[in-house]
Image (cartoon, rainbow, N blue to C red; front, side, top):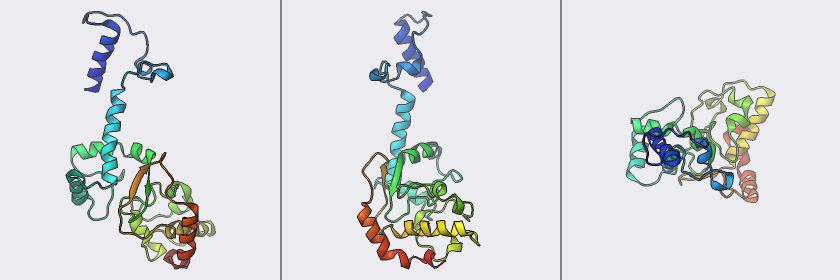
Length: 223
């Protein structure tokens, strides 16, 4: 549909009302859709606009807005603690199409963790890190990639998350990861998803205070 509409828009821009006119375009369509301050004509990019509007649905879902369709999707497909992941796409054709934009959304958003039930432990950005990237030595030992953060936060033994034994380097990285976990609040409130250009989530002083108070108590430190 977007291609057909763009075809009509291109014809109107370069050829006017004459449907049989074959005048070639004077500029590439990608250039025409650039903002005027960047040398374009400011014509709306419908593909980009459409994806931006669809991304709003993902934002409402992850923020768990109290609206019927969000509640329905959570209860129908994710009530068991599972989360949308590349290896697990369930639901209607509409929802599966929305999930195709997951990488785009996760590239723009990060989570302020409270209950940890809307955030993937290894794949999502929390505390300004993506653990899969930041701790590759540990990620190579994971048992289940698509676990959510709430599960990892409340794990009682390290072998619930990782294959043992650990190398000296992996053990050192595990201590760093445990420090990240104990710096998280333990709350029943819902996670808050924001875009990465928003305000910082935690002040360094509050994070340090929480860390020093709770670091010795986390089960992962026993290993």
